[in-house]
Image (tube, rainbow, N blue to C red):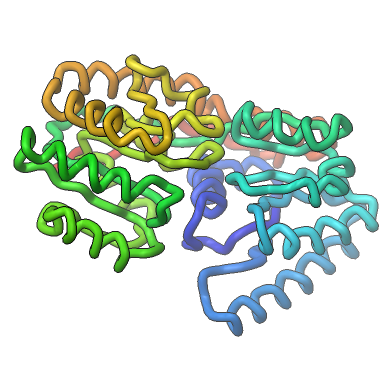
Length: 351
C-alpha cells in the first residue's frame, strides 16, 4: 500500500489511519510505503528515495505483489504514477484508489490498466466511467468510527477544511455574521490550513473577529474533541468529492449544512440528516444555520439521523469488508491468525 506518511494533512492519511485503527493491517499482509509527507522539499526527497528503494525490493523479492495506491489529483498523482507504472511493468495488479476531486482525463491510461479503481462515492464513479468505459470501478467507503455519546452542545459552528473561497468559508462568515443577531453567543471554529490571514481579515470586516477561532490543522484527537462540542458542521463548498470530515461529523451525531456537490447529496438527506444549500446561496445558508441553532429539538433529530446514516454506510465493520473482498478477489490471503473485525471506537464523552 502506497500513500501519505502518517500525520500528513489530508484525507489519505486519515483514511489509512482508520485502516490501522480498525485492524486492516493486522488481518492482511500489508506493507505500507510512505511516498510523501508534509515536511520540507529535502525531507520529501529523502522519503521518496526510501520509497523507491523499498518498493523496488518488494517487487524483486515477492513472487506476487498486489499494489494498492492512494492518489490525489494534481502533481501528487504523477508521483504515485511512477510506482504504478513500475508495478504494471512487473506484472503486479494495481488498485488505484482516488481521493478527492480535480482529476482530469490525462489519467485515463492508468484507469484502464488498474485491476480496480476505488472511489468514495457514486459521483466519482460516474466521472471515471465518463473518461473510460474500460475501467473496473467500485465504491470503497471510507471507514469512520461512530460515536455513541450524547452531549450538550454549545452554539458552535464547525468548519473543517482548507481555508479558501472554493470551500465556501467566506460565505459561511457572512452567514454567521447575520445569525449572530439571533444567537449572540454563536461561535465559529475554522479548523484547517490555507488562507488564514485572509479569512481573519474578512471576519474582522464583518465585525465577528471575536466570534471566530482558528485552530490550524488538527489531528484525529483534536478533530474528535471539536466534533463533540459542535452544534452544526458547515461545509458550503463549491466543489468537492466526498469529504471525510463530513462523514466524521455525521458519525459524531452533528447535523450538517453543506452544498449538494460531488457525493455529498448521496449522503446527506435534505431536511432529515442536515440541510443542503446551493453553492453561493448565502441566504439559504443563513436560514439553515439559524434553524439548527435555535430549534435544538430539530438539530438533535437531524444529528441522530446523520449518525444512523454514517453507521449504516461507513462504520468500519461495513466499509472495510468491501476492500477486504477486493483483496481476496486479487489473490491476497489473509494472515493465518486473522483477528476479528473490531467494533467502532466511541468518541470520549465531554468533560
